[in-house]
Structures are given as C-alpha cells and as structure tokens.
Length: 406
Picture 1 (spheres, rainbow, N blue to C red):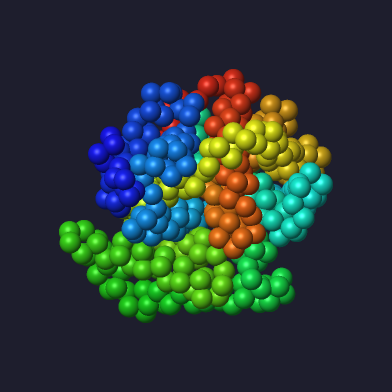
Picture 2: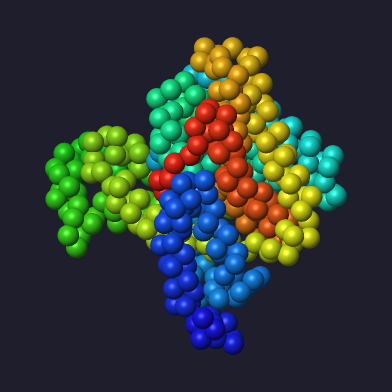
C-alpha cells in the first residue's frame, strides 16, 4: 500500500487506480448491504478516507480534477435529460415551485438566525444547498420499490424536478459575481444561447431528412458520432455558461434538456451510451474526488453542526412539501399520512447539488472549507437515512439499488 503512495504524494495514475478500485467495489458493497447504503455514499466516504485529509493515497492533481469536472458535467447532463418538462408546469408544477421558493426563504431565515457567520451570501449558499432534491439518486430507489407509477411516485417526480432545477438556477443567479438584476439578464442571455444551440440541430434534421439516418449509420464501431456530438453539446453549453460567468452546472443541465429534445424528435438514442460513459468512469470520479475535499476532523470537531444541518434540511425542504400536500389543494394531493411523510423525506434527500453549491461557494471564498465539509457530510447522511426511513414508513425495507443517476 505504502509503495503506491510516494513520499511526495501519489501520481495521477496512482490516484486513478484507487478511484477505479473504489468505483468497482462501491456497487458490490451496496448490493451486499441490500441497498441500505447507496453506492454514492460509499464513493464519497471512500474518497474522504483516500484523500489528503486522511490516508493521502489519492489527490485531485495532474488532471484528475479535470476528469472530476467532466463527471460533474455528465452527472447534470443526465439529470437534465431525465427531467420531463411537463413536470414543471400545470397546477401541481406551480405548487411545487411555490413550495420550493417558500422553502428557500424559510431556509435562509433559519440559517440567518442560527449561523455564526455574518455573510449574507454564505447564508444564501447554505439555504440553496438545503432545499435541493437528488431526483437522480431517488429514481432507482422508487423504481425498485414499485412506486414510480403511483401517486407518491408522481409527486416525488414533480417536487424532485423543481428541487433540481430551482437550486441550479438560484446558484447561477445568487452566487455569481453579478448583482441580481445583471445576473438575471445574463441568465436570460444564456437561455437564449441554449435555445439557439438546441434549435439549430432540430432545424437541420428537419431540412435534411437523411442526416438522422446518416447519424444512425455512424452510431457504432469506431465512429460513435452521436455520442461525440452529445459530449460536444455538453462542452459547448458548459463553455457558454462559463463565458456568461454562470456555473457550468447550469450549462450541463441545459445540455441534457436540449439532448432530450433532440432524441424525442426521433434521432439516434444515445442515453444508454452516455450512461455507460458517465456511470462507468466520469461520475464515480466526481463523487470520489468530491469526498477527498471532506475534512473528517472538521466534521468530527463539529458534530452538533452536522446533526443540525441534517435536521435543518429535513425541516427546510421536507416540511413545506408535507404542508403543501396536507393543506394546498392541487388535484393530486396524497391522502395517506404515511405517503405524505414519505414524500417529505424523499424531497429532502439531497447530495449532488449540495456538493456543487459548496464547491462554488468555497472556490469564491463565500464559504469556509470546514463548513462545506460538514454540509456535504450532512447531504450524504440524508441520502443514507431519509430514503431508508421513507421505505420503512411504507412498510418496505430497501433492496439492492441500481446505480444512482445523481
């Protein structure tokens, strides 16, 4: 073991060796534990143990960080691809948006009252992180539980869709270097650019009918043109977001939504191939390297803050969702108290956006690394505990889960 970690620190290839080993072992361990511990949590914990704050066997140096950034992009591209825009509209969609906004305001007030920091921007960053929903992580869980086509499953999808998109937009607007008015203008320009990027290929396919067939013929072998085009789309919108001084997560998410439209228009299916690339390499690297940034000593030194963050996430995100199902009629309300409690716990399950928000906040010096470590640890705890408790409330223990999409 010690031979693989040189005195001057591990080389990039050694770091990737440990990351690849963890990526292989994580789903096997999750299955051995019957899904009680999602593999995304195992990846984060393993990264924490392997990283510079613990064993020091792996680092993000030498290009590993770039692979992690691509993993972040691929994670949110797939999240955007899975998002059905219809979930964001209608009466239930509008209620989900109002619930999320109410939760954001409530979370900001809660953090302002309880936090020691005097930085308003840090309070905003923490509030955004606390009101996210890890829909991609939840999808395999509710699919295996047979809940996807039930009223509870549809409610999880509606609140989860808003709980993904809302924090991403808020992060880009509220944590950017612009004031809010300028940030909204920049966001509108980005949306326009994303629409142009999406419309041009659709028009080309419409005017050149043979183009789709040509892409289909180049779908395999050494060409893999649709996959290459999808990755180019991802990088184009990440670059556009960066140029507009927005977070690249927004560009990646927009790329997924554009890709969904292209595929829905009858073009070659690339989602399974992208999942293979993403979940086979890039996304595990993202989670393991993100775990390396968690300082275990900071978490151990502030256990009360850790528990407080977990409780605050449950209250700030879960309670408004529960109240909306109980008291706000929107035509699809859950009648069962057990289902309302399950929905609140599922909606409060968040991790990837928490990781993304804390990374942005730390890189722009809006949040200390210690606070970010505790907040990410709290997010991992929600993924570990909240779906489990929700399943137990419903009378079912979790089985071995499929790979998490978020």
